[in-house]
Length: 183
Ligand code: PRP
Ligand code: MN
Ligand code: MG
Image 1 (tube, rainbow, N blue to C red):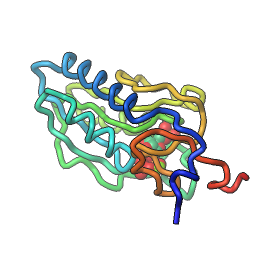
Image 2 (image 1 turned 135 degrees about the vertical axis):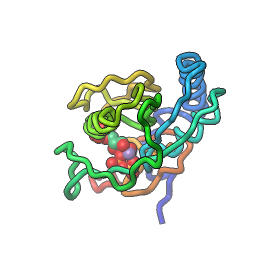
Image 3 (image 1 turned 135 degrees about the horizontal axis):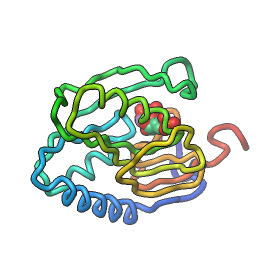
Image 4 (image 1 turned 90 degrees about the horizontal axis):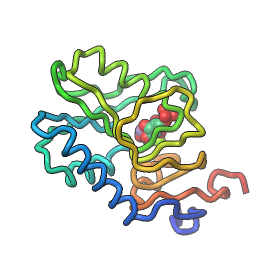
């Protein structure tokens, strides 16, 4: 079984800093969408933790919906071709939509997703991402709310997985090289 302590090489963002940042983003969102009807959309599965914490930090009466997407093809997401595994239950025509993500890596997932959502005639589409890797971005993405810019390292926790594990860590850590076979 995995030993989550030994598999970590370091804690990049501790739990209290993450939670403080989410609260900060939530108050900006509260202000920006005051008086508006907001739908927040979480991208499964990575966004589960951010959605849960962000939603509870908001004072706005939001609605929540989910999408599940997958890169097309085995193992690589460099193509930017995305498959919808679970679509929204909500008709977003005329709605203010805020897409919530755990991380923007290459930007390909969100670039595709925002384009897809905008074709449904919403009132607005914005993005809130807990993390962004500026050095990994392949497609420029217009992100309104970003938690932290981080180095281009393999990060886990707070929704982020390596081979479907470590999502439940309450902080962001980097994975020890021995876990993915480099050492
Ligand atoms: C991860 C992450 C983002 C996406 C970012 O999801 O949660 O959704 O990759 O990468 P990109 O900017 O290079 O497109 P993943 O496809 O691993 O699915 P998961 O959320 O279920 O882990
Ligand atoms: Mn994801
Ligand atoms: Mg993943």
